Length: 193
Picture 1 (cartoon, rainbow, N blue to C red):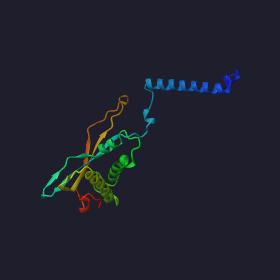
Picture 2 (spheres, rainbow, N blue to C red):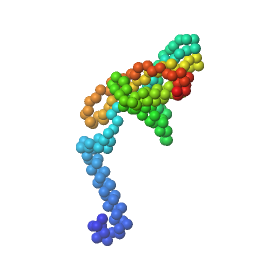
Picture 3 (cartoon, rainbow, N blue to C red):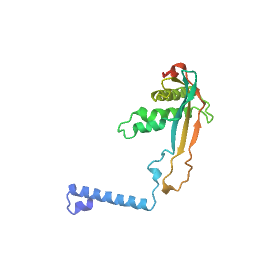
Picture 4 (tube, rainbow, N blue to C red):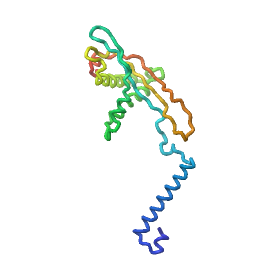
């Protein structure tokens, strides 16, 4: 801009002209680096999600005739995804409640699903209540039954790296299945204990 000003170009014209030239040269440089694969894309997302974790639940239903039946797996994470897809203002609960409950459980349990601290039982109760409320909303027990037990599992798949990275990973899902949890009587009726 100093050179333009020395040639008598008004400051109101010199400044935008220089800025436009900077924008063009920066974009051209960035494009050249991208074309020549000279960009470390991880700098733009230094800690991107490397895994897709889905939380699923199934229930054992006690029926009024004294029998039991087991539901199929309900993919609660997929339900959350559908609830926020296209929603300009999704709620914090829709986005994070289930994921944080699962993260809380994993942080307070070892690989054999045994609690490793004082908060282990709390995390189990929290996760169980969320899943029971979701099953109640889905009317999983139907008109003739009550949820007696729940079983929760996670399905973890690695997020495929971009083709240009050259990284090779397995995209085979890995399941972590918890044991069956019995429900307190008030939870079995759709309450939260």
